[in-house]
Image (cartoon, rainbow, N blue to C red; front, side, top):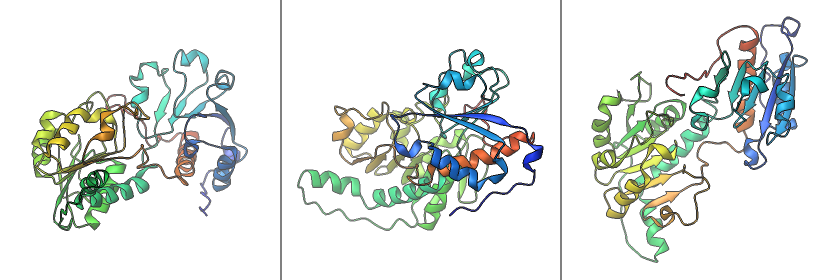
Length: 342
């Protein structure tokens, strides 16, 4: 049971506000804000009772009517055409996901409307998945699974993970959680981030200029960088060729960051020992995709970072805490920077 979040400003001093929550029936239930989950969150944030008026819509059926009075929109996807006219009172959009690549470019955003995202909600589950994936690659499970499919008995022995090197491309919330798990396994951790800001669980941080150098030192490469105009195609043939022979790769970011055809060729040739891919374009991955039959590859259907029980509760807790900041005229957390696109 989560504890109630009690904030100092009394409800009497906060003005009423209308938030519209948009769901998709086609999305997995883990991503749906149900009336029950919303009511649970309101009980954890009792200060908002009587302040927040919420409407919940599905597949844009109630969107235009609700947006006539909504000041806040909480959604993953929503109609962006003429949004300023459709939502005259809109002041804040909270994107119910960490990646906002599906919303780029941001030229649709009405002037003065703040955009925030779900950074941090995914970190606990993502860190655990990354730790699992590192052990899977280290113990050569992609190869063993390929051999199993062909009824081929081939003993390939591995060594412990401790002392090996992990490179994390994009040390944000998810990458930072992965770094913490990697240190528990005894790995040396290299990080690459645009601003080169240090991280407590990263032994050495590189900027973009050190990208190829770090790739050449890594036994494992984990991709958790956002997909932007700057990171699209970041890991192509040149970068894959720069990786240490026999290294492994994990992509928990977006498919557009990595050249999957070049990766497939490296897996077939044995240049890389294995890969784990959780993200694809399009999704679901078509049945005729050559990736399904690629040796030494494990495919997971975009499930690495979304907690089946806590994704929406964590999202709503983050939203309510930001809502209090919004109503008390303080800067919002997780604000998207149009210049960096995340």
